[in-house]
Image (cartoon, rainbow over all chains, first blue to last red; front, side, top):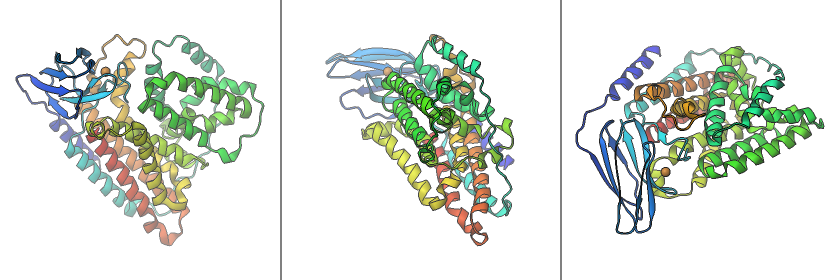
Amino acid sequence: MIRWLLLVLMLAGCSAAPTAETGPVVLNLSVDNSSPQRTSVSRGQQVEITVTSTKDAEVHVHGFDVLATASAGKPASLKFVADRTGTFEVEAHPDTLLAQLVVR
Amino acid sequence: MILAHGVGERHDLPLPLDLVLQGAAIALLASFLGLGLLWTRPRFTPSPDEEGRDWWPVRLLVLVGLLFVPSWPHLVFVLLWVGVAFASMLLGPVWRVLNPLRFAARFSLGHAYPPRLGHWPAALSLLAFTWVELVSPHALPWFLVAYAVVNVAGGVVFGPTWFARADGFEVYSTLLGRLSPLHGNPFRRLMSTPVRPGLVAVIAVCLGSTAFDSIGSTPTWARWGLPDALGLVVAIAVVAGSYLLCTRLLGGPLAHSLIPIIAGYVVAHYYSLLVIEGQRVFDQSVRADETLAAPVIVATVQVVAVLTGHLVAVVSAHDRTLALLPKQRHLTGQVPLLLLMVGYTAGGLALLFAG
Ligand SMILES: [Cu+2]
């Protein structure tokens, strides 16, 4: 039992090793037909999100506190460095989920 | 938790799939190995519950502290809901000592608490709380006022018994407190969980709501576009239904064996929230140190917590079924509950992978 648990722990260590990646992660999202998906991001990577909307919408990347407003014909543009690990929501307020960033 | 802007803006990374599969395999193997290897006569005699001492100055301190709360969501969703749960597992039923509402019992009219009510009021108030937590966090102030009014009224009418049986937070804390190693053998403390009406409901609400917290934060759930309220109720109903189906008439007397499963899942689910948001309870402008929430640490805590909860659950269910079932049904009688526990554990790991 103990041996298994140790094995599990070791595997946890291995599978969490980060992979280096270059270039920004680019996401194009829409508030009107949102179909949220998960996107993998490496810690430290640049993220560039563009969000279109036919109505005024405040777009928020949780955990990084990046905010921008989208309106008809004028997409919101959000750029930041993903400098912490975890799963974070990109959301149009009040509660439309646009995407999730999985930062490892 | 969907409480954006303050609490819970960061969710954990999905658990790696290989870990989920290995964890589930270990749970399955260990359970059936246990069935063959564990003892054949009940071992754990229940140890009677100690009367908690009434330390009213502690409660007074809590009450005065409430006047200086900088952020109610942090206080309730982090310190009370998660912090008290963790503290109870380590130290015992801490909310019984801290609960400021218990002051109401000093002015008690002393009516006898109806045994039929059991833990049902606690199950309802926990359902209301998880509803606020997961469906409409903006209703938190209303919930807190209603909670205080109902429990003060209950305390005045029925005295301290009301809080021990009907106050949701206290019942939750006391159940988890049975796992604390500081109050004697946790297995014996689990066995002595009184079987009261509504106990299974309390357990189903706790387990189902935590499960829905994981499901509800997946993009897949968002794409389905179903109401969160429906998801919460279905998750609780699935837990309650599957449990009653697998245990039949023994549902009540075996319910205590699910407490470790709840505890394991609560630790797995809330560990990172506690170590990150716990640093921001008194000052939300600080950026928390995230060393303790590094991916390897979180994944390890999650798998170890879920598997430990599973093992403790299997052992305590085994011991109780030996006492409840006739000898010829000892082996076969345990199988449905064992399978259900493997199902809950594998499901819990799968949710940590998905949510
Ligand atoms: Cu937001």
